[in-house]
Image 1 (cartoon, rainbow, N blue to C red):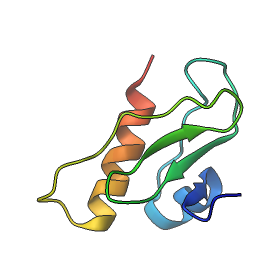
Image 2: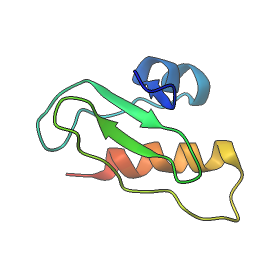
Image 3: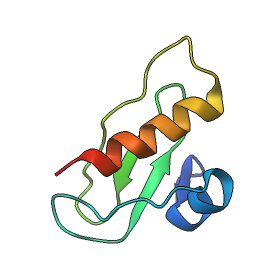
Length: 74
């Protein structure tokens, strides 16, 4: 597994946020992809995004925004 992928359980521990199931395939196997532009990622159907790419945000804030953006997808 890619070391940049953080499980939804770990996201909940770190940030107090629950990641929603994949909006495309319904899988609970979703992760937070860490990096300069963090984003949600489904390992079942390989769906990605949306990206949290505001350079003015610190690392943890970008990760929180990435989870919130993932959870807003319908």
